[in-house]
Length: 375
Image (cartoon, rainbow, N blue to C red; front, side, top):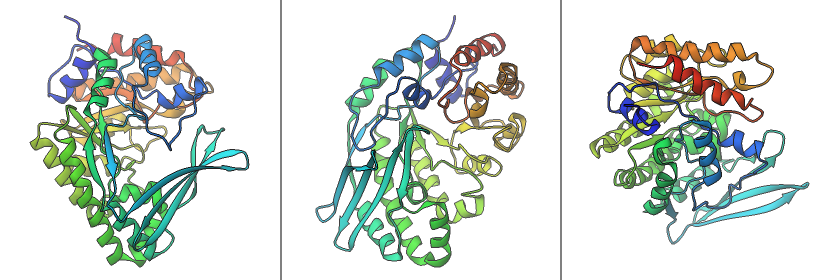
């Protein structure tokens, strides 16, 4: 009997062999751009993205990533104030996030860029060692409450077309690298302020584990963690020093609650796949092989070993019109060739399907998976 996309995805996590390789995509960025739907990072979205989910159903592409979903609330301590505002910056909206504590205040900014159809960082929030302490104080004061009814609304809307992953957001290093300090700033902090950085990372991650404990009680089958891992930014040695203890403990707690864990690895893969596997994760999400990535599909499997789930496959540039469709098709077939090593992989895009992608390729990949991905 033919399995649904939901059944195929869960079969992979259960260690079973589905009838066909699961096919799922994160179409959000492409869909927003195609339909001229800029999203607002300053507001909370409390309803499922019904138009996006309906498109997944029409295209036959499994759904898994609710990027605008909000499935738990975050509150700060009585002596911490968190403010979000929007200002006009030369005709473009700019969002300002500000944290005020007894130690002082910090703020970060992002501006809407029409060309990339995304929010670019215009100001990092941490400029000094004292700012870093302010951040640690603020983020250590967070508390969390469930909004599982919102999560269930997404599950009901998606139905058999996929599995709704539940995201924990960033670890301490993820907050620093992507929100408050940047890659170079974090590297300098590790060299110049190691004791303070250690203290702040531990403060934030200890608080993050409270969220992990909440997610362990959620109705979600799969929890996704990750800091947009790339081994040139967090190589194994750096990861081992600053982030690995948190990931090992978070994954241990989630596994103890019967959850599966995926980790977002959307950059350089050599070293990253192995270090995330060794931390105990079940799946690497957003795996991007050559030509944009640094490993072939076969090399991804060699590093991951036989049981680590590889979810990814077609790099972003191959979705674009300047790349011949035959090159795109070959990339899909190269990923499907992982079948010879067993069923522990998912046919997906390397991270997201990008803006300007050729729409027909969504169905081309679907048809190739159905034809060549049968066990």
